[in-house]
Length: 328
Image (cartoon, rainbow, N blue to C red; front, side, top):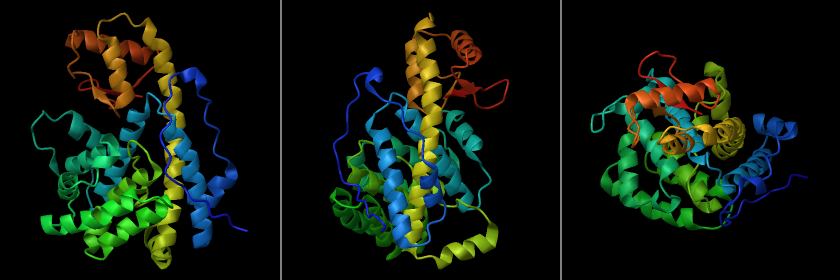
């Protein structure tokens, strides 16, 4: 018998002490197998419910590194979006575009894709389907929707986001709203909007980019695409959420270990402004060494980052000797 678990809205759990938080249990092999290739809609529904239940527990712990985790997933989703429209920029190039562009300068089409996904990961969930945010995100993702169409879509989406019920079913319906209007909009804006609706239904304070990181998952060329298109759309979306949740859990486990190391090292840092640097590293995907920190010179910042790297507390992510970028 297949259990049909439903993920329902619950209030977030505030964590006041790291000592009170039990480490996340590893993902069981049966769940990975179930998410890898569900054979029916019921199997896909069960796998999505189980994987998202495990992910929900991580989200509700409200770890200090959750911001970095969500933004790292946003970067992955933007890289997928760029690849889908035929761009050559990978995640590293997108990160450079954002961090090495001067404030106020144009970041280009793929940079705007990254900004859209960063908006999903950083803004409060309750604001994501507002008319203003939808208009900005739709433009950044190249959905091609005009203001009137977006207003009508928002009117249909907001009741879905605020409803109580199966979270993935709400995400599926959000994509269906777009598909009824424009297939291009469903392809470009659909994953973003689905993740916003899912997060709202689950009662999360901030959305986690999920469906976006699975848009071209699996690879396999034309034969794989043909098999995928033969599956019912609903089944494919449930299966994608199952895989995405497991991918997010794996990243959470990795970043959690790295953040623990940083927090162990942090009290030993004597440089003025080091607390602000640690906070930046825990709340964002990456920071550039030249980013202003009150009370610290450029030279002092470089020395601090070099020390953190030597202590294995952070990584240098660019591989360059200049314009270096650091993150968990």
